[in-house]
Amino acid sequence: MPKQKTNSGAKKRFKVTGSGKIKRAKAFKRHLLGRKSKKRKEELAKSAVVHKSDEPRVKLMLRMA
Image 1 (cartoon, rainbow, N blue to C red):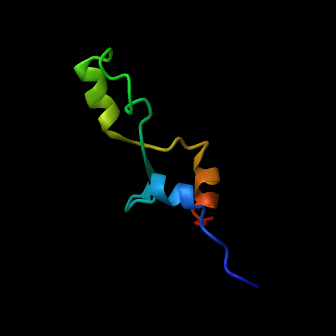
Image 2 (cartoon, helix red, strand yellow):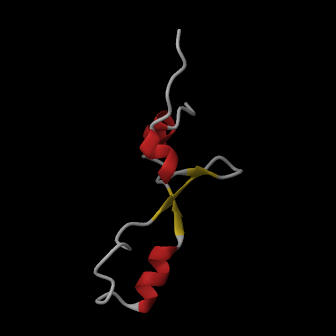
């Protein structure tokens, strides 16, 4: 049986931490930045963790499950 392929889009968007959590980037930081406050843009620049309810789907795309 052939190997399972990792989802190419997922492997570019997610990283796995040492404790097994999945890191992601926040949305809304690409354009229309002039109207957003400095504080909001700083918060959007930080990474976030994938929500517990979404983890199974992301792990499946990364072929971790």
